[in-house]
Length: 127
Image (cartoon, rainbow, N blue to C red; front, top):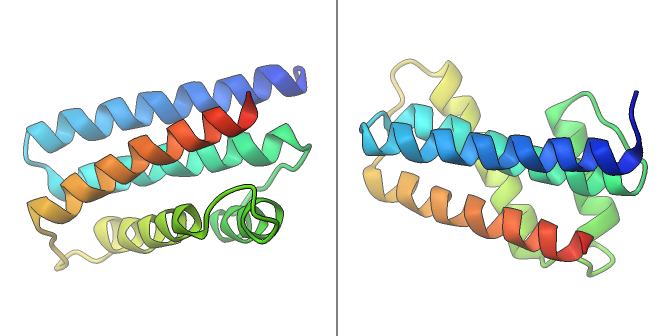
């Protein structure tokens, strides 16, 4: 299954890849796809944080709940980042499953910025 450190590193690598894809599709003006991919960047980073303390999750909602429980409630991560994760999950669901839902470029740009910040916060915490 690989060492704990290698699984954390793989999740962070995935986070960076998803963020890169989110930026590419944003530039191509595929805004809902960018929202979806930027959520995955955030999700993978949150998974890396959980993996660093030996927690593996299978469901998105569980990842969000466990991230809050193990990193936000004890003050390791600011609540703002929990809100980034939970709001990105909500918009990803809309972007992926609500065919008539659309978004504004500014919302996508903001989420990209938040995803980048979220990854940096997680990487800093894991040092």
